[in-house]
Image 1 (cartoon, rainbow over the protein chains, first blue to last red):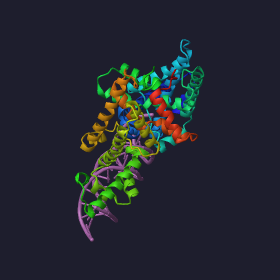
Image 2: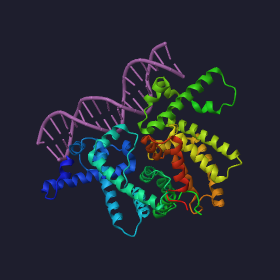
Image 3: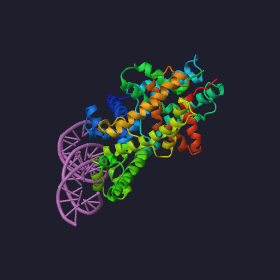
Image 4: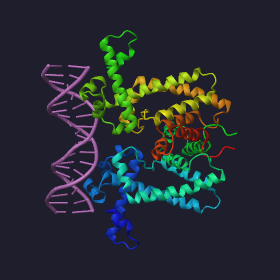
Length: 211
Length: 211
DNA sequence: GTCTATAAGAGGATAGAC
DNA sequence: GTCTATCCTCTTATAGAC
């Protein structure tokens, strides 16, 4: 199972390496399918087919469909945390600029079909995620780091101080599943970069004209 | 089936009235369940149980789960069109004010658990909706009427003229399934009215401070 | 750990009596 | 048009050989 391998430090046997590679391939397939069709419509058969192994083999690596989704979310949040680290190191950005850059990454990733999203209503999935330590750890770390930037940007008055910080955080998180991107892309008449600029603009500057 | 009854003008027999009442009860249950759990997690058994009839009876009224969802959306869009009519008659509002009021209604309805939403990814559902005339008619009517207000508000420069009108329209539509409302409500420390105000503010004024 | 085969059950839809 | 009983497909998950 994957937890053991995740904890291993440096020296890996050949067997362990191939194991990790296989699990990475599984998680990559799950991420793609999750972004494409969502949790409910994704089937474990599809995942197995895309990886090219039998479904029973897949269940040797991950105990359930929920665990599969959780692993995909963990890897995605690790990517997000890497982006956060990069932005934190960029001294040319203020807090609001970092939040905006983070939001841009989220939009670009979703538009590229590489942002897995989970339904918040599904209760079996919800409880599995709440019990998943690796997932919860990363979610809290990410929220803490973005939360610091939000508080700072509100102190700067670059982000509206009248909004509760949680509302700002949720609004940024929600860009990961914003259907507006898909609608505009389906129209077919705009470039991805243009679409991202527009959605980023509505998110930070609003629909109303700035005077 | 429902299409016939929908077309009838005024005089209804007793049988027809009870039929309509039953179909209204069915659609009401579908709307509620659609808002609560979404299309994929809603089961036809649940709908029948909530109405208090057998599943087979339900299939005498609606031919499939997709048709059930479409009927719910038709009724919801009729509600929306009624709101639009009311706003159009209010001479104290400009175009931007009407768009804002319409968005507020959408947010309030969703927060009240009365806004059915359909997944845009589900292909069987998607094709059923595209073939559903009553649904498509209303969707186009609603889009046309909101579109007029958007064009006018951009001419006023009360809504940002740099945005394509479709981007504005989709952004307003997307408020019907904005997860931020649910997140803030789950926190438990804010009133519904306060939550709606914040989301409406981020939608029209953005996250960044207005100077 | 990988496979084939299959259990177990949910859920959409229908048959046929009344 | 309503019911009970049933069909049938899809999907999650597991058994057991290699």
